[in-house]
Length: 570
Image 1: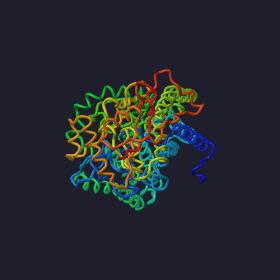
Image 2: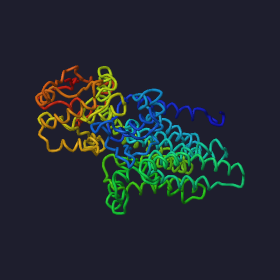
Image 3: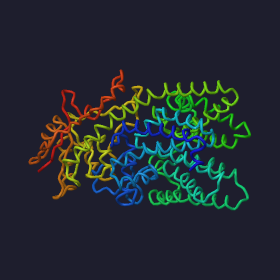
Image 4: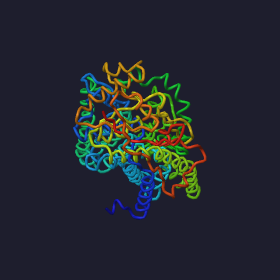
């Protein structure tokens, strides 16, 4: 304990207090719902792992909602394209605390990432300057926003920083326990995101660079290798079962063709390199790149500099080469490297402070101020916008939990289905399959903090199940399509299950006119989310037009037609 506290406990407790304050700050923007297709796949996969210890779904009906990242495998089941590492982590709180509370995992992992960065900084920078990279990351907008996205990038940050911290500890004090921890954390990286396997060569080289003849060193490294192999082997076994080959991924199965190419690199590089300082890492990107080059050039810091370069450079090149064109959320792929730029920037400032103390301190203060002025406003706008998307979804989901019996069939818009699918209380159908064109709900158009359309937030379309039943809906007039849909719904419902529809008054009237004789949509309740925000949140108001929340997305242009819950009877 004295070694951990160092000579001055204030230099540890001060940053810990800052991290705790940041955690409370993040909690103020938390909503217990997901609003993106990626988050749907992770949460749904966590549900199947928590309840049935499987990562696949076997649809009960061709109508059953599946997120857009699910695809059929040769064994007849549906698997998510994303690897199951994050879902395995999420399944534990899901099982113990429920799906809504389990979503707090990402803010918690962000806090632990900052703690790991602090401990790593104390080794690399000393007690006084260890707070600098922590402060630089606390104001990073992508880091703050993705604490609430319920995707895998926060988990990757946690795994990378703590594997680096454990390897640093292992190099100075060999231990089998630390070796097991370092190896398992590193091995989990590709199990959470496939492409993050690009981090592993640098981590392996770093761990081998201090290898001595001491037997304890070798035992610790063998322990690390065995621990790293465990999650990678589990991932390979899952892919063998799902796709028929342990090296085949869900991305390759879904997309086909080359996921990475030199042509894509040349096309995407200008946009990525422009976004890195403007949207991604801010002022720490140019300074961090220079600092890493400086560390690699000096013998005393070369080993650590090569570690940072060996992680940041390959992963950046890899994601620039990705076939998907750049969008406002592209920087999420490089979020873990922002920690490295912050750490390297602080290391360069430390050298400057030793050479010219006053100038070094002024430079550190200037960097922190500039980074805060750049990052905090963007953080507030991004988190506020995301909560305006997720809070109504959470409120509507809570309202349905109070009114719809568990196991019932529930027909809902896709943007709501992707959250309810992760909760798993009902059998879901996407209303987009048959909603009348005369009363079609407007498609949501979420935007990023700069007011641009956000492709990652577009709600999913129903995943087509390869059955003749859905094929027969194509080209049918509305009345016949609804009659065919009704027959499939009631075949799935049987005699024991009730059927509910989340819609609007205008759409209910249009549907009622088209339903087969003897079938009725009875209004059960209004589902008007409060949509209220605390008074202290007034400072997050923006002058730009705000993107619509879920209630606004479901309103008809003719008036305030709020969502309703209707029971479908016959």
